[in-house]
Image (cartoon, rainbow, N blue to C red; front, side, top):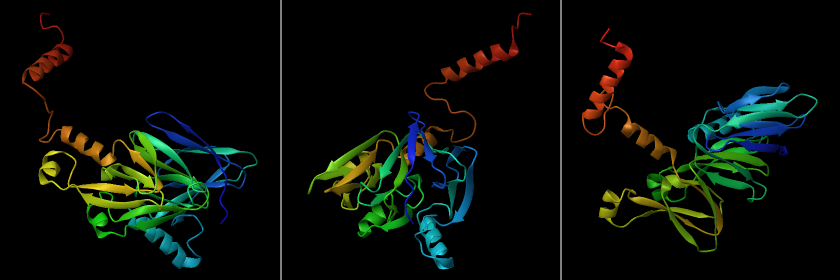
Length: 272
């Protein structure tokens, strides 16, 4: 299927969304639940699989496309938004957590992009969503993102999202960068990706960086995120009450002070 050529505009700073402009007959595909709004004249249809039209015909092709998405942890269904009106129409997709939305022109990236399995947000119709298996077993067992990652194929626009600030780097031939495994958002297929043991038990146990790091070797382009969502979630969980009720930090004095303040607010003036 020929790729639809769409215009877009990314809005917001920390909680971003992308508006995709569709000409009559053009369509965009998005993850289930990612749509923010759409203008009148856009028809929404949920399909089984990745909606790219490249998975082959018939039931087998649909099952194959759906199976790929299920393996990467995504929904079995994809939503297609088609402009059935006479003029230009817009549909918007919102990121599920704070961070940045990154536009990826697959035509300029050689037609393929490898990304973490929950990074895909939306794309122009015709972009194929598949899976990429890491060739080294060590990467699968210890790579943070695991043995399976998403693969985007085509020559159109795709949008991925990541948490925190995004860093794009181009690695020269033989240039190597050691990265926390959760900070790897995406990379071009020419980049070598493997997981390396940090080498010292003391560093791994007390350095706070874990036992393994991702080793990325050029040539290729990589995208990194400053705050993996898993790290953010673990900090939120650690700060949440663990035994019911409220969790006070520090001495007991803040609790007594807060109690007195609330008592004054809800109890009124006791001198009356």
